[in-house]
Length: 408
Image 1 (cartoon, one colour):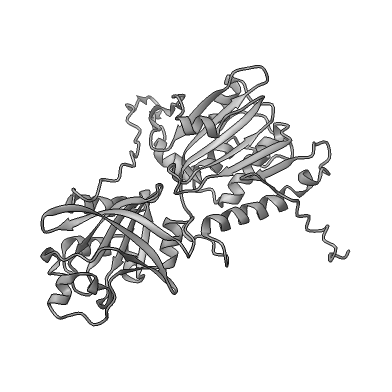
Image 2 (tube, one colour):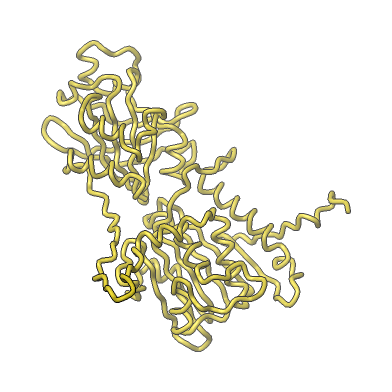
């Protein structure tokens, strides 16, 4: 959950810097940088309006780089970054139009990161405002770029302030295999990373992607499907698992299921048909996904696809981390799909009284209750009744024609 937050500072926010006050330029008494609510919702989706979002942030001082405890606090419609009013004279240049840039890892509590300010006419500010990734900052008060969304902007900042901003390590993989020529043409294998991006652009929302995998579980004769959507600030970023008690897969079946364009057989009424449903749905939401599966009386095995490491089309079988093992544990038989490094939606759902993370869970529940209502009711011909839960809460079926107010 690594973000780059950009803001063009206004006159009222510059009172945060003592140097601005010493120059007698201050108008208001505000001592904080404003953070737009939609940016906070995207970066800290589990934060409630009553919370203080704690952060440990590195920044420049006259003596070098220092780290300070700061926090975001809700103020009326927006949030404010408080807790640090630098007295350093190195901020003598601040004026309206300066660029405020913050790098933050929101997957931990407190969040960790760094920030810097650049003059309005600085080459960094001009380059970032002109770049396609961040040019909308000229029209928006603040933007938040996630991972690859800010790749070029991150590079500009890391070159200008390498002691504060790290180079974005996306690890974009290129196909470096030697091209072979023949009498009738040239071998041009696809670029793995670019093909993954194409598969990830199939138009899925998070609920529809989960539904695709739930359909796979039902096709595998599962009667119990447990979905866990972890808190994004609990230390492992944004992650989700779909676990079922279906038949499970042998090693050979798992390898074929993980193949792009697999030759797996599909039920007539299955949502997937072309051998990329698991891959397309997973990559539409996450850069890394792991499938753990186990047949009855057999040992579990797993394979992982990492969008940043696709050279040679080698699915990894490296040992899972301890928390991944816990999240994908299978007792008898079944399959678990783990999504890691999930991309947040561009616009987080908003529901009165709910933080965005809880709102996402609510929308997922509604979608699955509607799409799979016949399975949840036990009325799907030739199928078992299915129980689906999200974070331990059972999903009740939502039959659109079964409501008492519906009239034929």
